Amino acid sequence: MSDIKTCVSLYSLQDEYLNKRMSLSDIMHYVKDCGAQGVEILPDQMIKGAPEASPETISAWNALIRETGLTPVIADVFLNTNLYKNRTLTHRECIGLLAKEIAEAHEMGIHLIRLVSMVPYWVLEPLMPVCEKYDVALAIEVHAAMAFDVQATREFLDEVKRLDSRYAGVVIDTGIFCRRFPRVVRAYETQNGTSPEVFDYIDTLFEAGTDLHAVLRKNDYKYPNELQTACRTEHDRMFVPLCDGYENLPFSVMDEYMPYIRHFHLKMFEMTPEGPEYSMDYKGLLEYLDAKNFHGYVSTEYEGNRFTLPGHPMQEKQQVAMQQAYLRKCLQEKHGA
Image 1 (tube, helix red, strand yellow):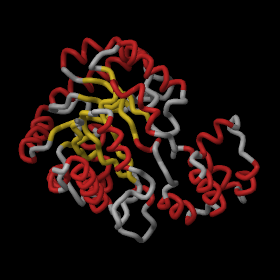
Image 2 (image 1 turned 30 degrees about the vertical axis):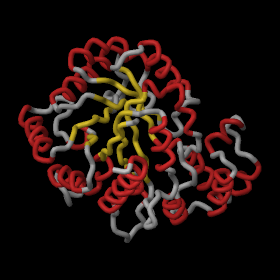
Image 3 (image 1 turned 60 degrees about the vertical axis):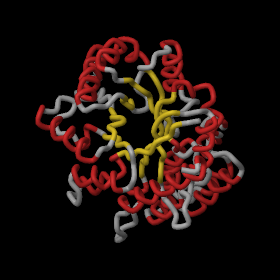
Image 4 (image 1 turned 90 degrees about the vertical axis):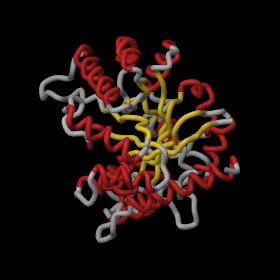
């Protein structure tokens, strides 16, 4: 039997934090009150001085962990190779920067780091001794538009397989499992001037079991005639490339990678009042993971916040609570607990 636990990425509550409606302490206690067992944090976002936070900052974080009883599951790390205007970071600098992230994760009680998509595969092998020293694993995020058909992702996954270490793995973002195009995206972008016909065309692709990313790739990134017709303005043609980040892959694409998958981002655009998320089949995914005997966390990652219509209230807190409640319901139905 699988052992699936729930988690919340604090990315989901970034507007509450940025606009000072909630402190980090407020957010951590809210996550606990929502029923989550774990927490996922972006140190760049909420840990001052990361990846070289002061002892006082680390101590405050660890105090919050003790207060809430949450498990510090994973840190989301971005390899900022463009720190300088005139050059990218060297290999040595990249590895040194990630070594600092690993050491800091250890101090925060975290044993897993998500590397953002497109981090080069060559960072893994030289960092394995550092990972072993601090007991912190590195896992690449497989994200829509940067998933299994992208060379950099395939190279990283091949390296994970070659190393075959518990310190090298994969994080799956469920944006690759959209079953419908998010209607909150449509509403927001239509208000910004995108023609409804563009979204009508994209909806027909999802209804046919595919998606824009797959169609464009198959068509050598040339717009099919139907899409050309749907694009009424120059704005439409400029916007369409942003719509390929919602893929419609079968769960079976994970089959060969299950031994290496450490964590899931349950992408969320819109939890509906009736229960499920509008675009995602979380219940089906949890059933797949249960059948595969997955042991780990599935983490709420709300991105509908960026598509909040002008004049409408931010729904971060409500959406996080709704998803956590729905996940608990699905897991209870499955295991009868």
